[in-house]
Image (cartoon, rainbow, N blue to C red; front, top):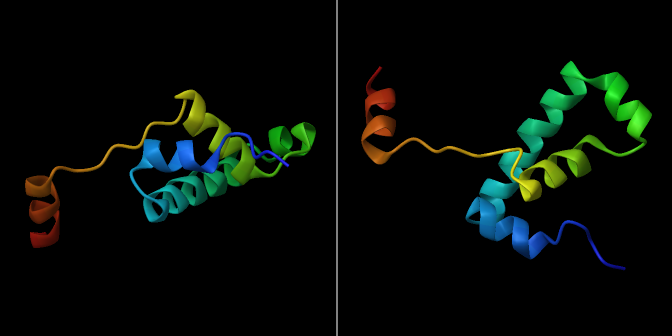
Length: 75
């Protein structure tokens, strides 16, 4: 059985498996909350839709620069 999109490719896009899990989980929750009809009609799980979006480039993860992250911690 082949997984589509390939997990190894998704990990390369995200940086590592922990970031990948976080990105996909957040997007899946957003899809479930904002577009439940779409998920039901597609007959796919939200996590699968999120993975496909990341692989195709429709979902882009942006991370704060180290200096920005330190500034946020001070607030």
